[in-house]
Amino acid sequence: MIKHTALSLLRDLKAFIGIKKERLDAIDAAPDTAVESSFGVNMLADAMHPDRISLEVKEVKKDRFGSFLVLISGERRTLPSAKPGQFIVIKPSVTGIKYSRAVYIAFAERTSYTVFIPQTDDSEAEKLVNARKGDIFEATSPAGLGFYQPLRDSGNIFVCCDKEGFGASEAFRNDKELQERVKVYTHLAGAVDTENGNSQLSVFLRECKLIDGTLFIFGSEDFVTLIKKTAEDCGLIKKRIRYDIISPGKIFPDEEKKYVCRVKRGSEEFDVLCYGHMPLSASLEYAGVECNINCMSGTCGYCRMKLVSGDISVHFPEGEEPVRMADAKHGFIHPCRSYPLSDLTVII
Ligand code: FES
Image: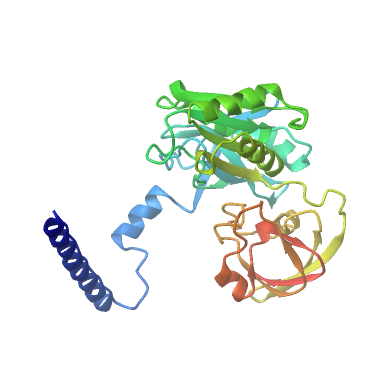
């Protein structure tokens, strides 16, 4: 037995050393010039997951809490595939200004996405809720990691959402393979009262724990943080909790401070008003400055810009990584999660 184990270990070690040499030889033989974008794999990846897609509103279905928009490709193509729990960032052009808004895909087909736009007190979102047939939006490909993975997650699925996350819960409900195993707790109005015991929610979370389910939480940051904590207090283990935050919490609700942001972009240089309670990217977009927004959660780095002077507060939900170290070291910020604390100068 010992001899057998030792031999098998030696075989593995020999194979590993062989692979290492093969890899190093391949790295040495590789050209040090950038890979052409016309390289086959790159073209395939771009076709499957393009940076930007054009979407046209085919239908609007009003709901008490918002609107479902049925979107088709503006170019009449098949759309990148999307899993339940994923979102797209749409950039509607309202009065000529493009601003970014992340919305969950409630139903995905090869040629259409149905997204849910919650009704909020945000006037820009309201314009989106009132979108009309024929409107065209630029959008990102589906993204987000809050989807079901059979090898990682339990077969029993529990989805908890607020109004902002409603689209994601609909996606789980609409998925033919998952719908039989999904239980949904939807909190569409009012504050969640966990201190005085929200009995329906407690029963839901206890059942999830009892049958070893995976809990998916979708919605605004305040809601997700609260439910995550409540679930942990209920005894759910962390690896059984997945979450995705679609909109930042109201972190500076009373802060109405205004600052001037000097923007340097190529040969241009101009000033923009930015607000203490808004992510810098939102202030820039409202002023008509386009930003490369992708995830809106500070994680992808797509929006990065260089902070030349001024102070910002970087806001991340509890327990999440702040701006990646390499970016921070070289003075780059992620404006989708940066709030100004003074006048700023940035290079886009
Ligand atoms: S859009 Fe992804 S980090 Fe800002």
